[in-house]
Image 1 (tube, rainbow, N blue to C red):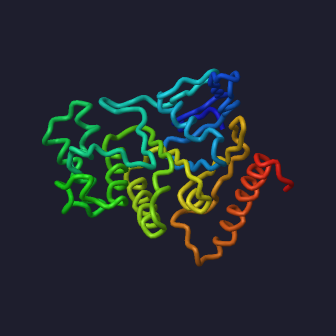
Image 2 (cartoon, helix red, strand yellow):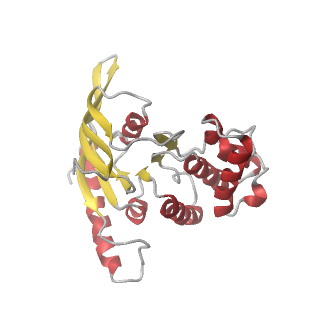
Length: 264
């Protein structure tokens, strides 16, 4: 998939090693893939296979030991390359919802009135207008995560990196936020890399799923989701989705059994 004018990101032969008291540990080995400009790509894999490490490399928080990351599109004025959303929302407790959402815009020098107006348009999209002047401790966990996602979108990054953003939420809140995420993504069309342990979530959200395995971490398989959103659970498409989920599960099961040295 490398090459082409509509690619937003290309990772070529990425490797990452860490020194330890017992020698070098290889976290990632020969990671190669490309993502289109407005594609939503899910990443699944067993714990410890390097999913978070991969996001940190793309975000520039860590440097690869070898290989390269190529950003195929230029940045517009005041645009940042990437924004990260973690499982913990990371809101500033001394800031209101409005100021948290507007924070990234402030960092790029947008005038106060303009950034607050833009932040409010995002807050309106998820029905949090009545909480705009509340502080994080006055919100539910789901609301805080919603604000964290809005802050990332409002900053207008080229690439949005999401590391299990719904992992700590209950099933009902997850379902609501997944739909909200897809709606905001359709309206703003960012390139999204979305790490999750939830196979259903990966298939529901992604145009494509990268299945990672380790140790060391590598991409075991790329799986295209051949169904347009929204995925209708009652339609004939459900059988195809079930087969995709089962296929991913068997890959991950094999990896887990291997790590436990159990017969498959």
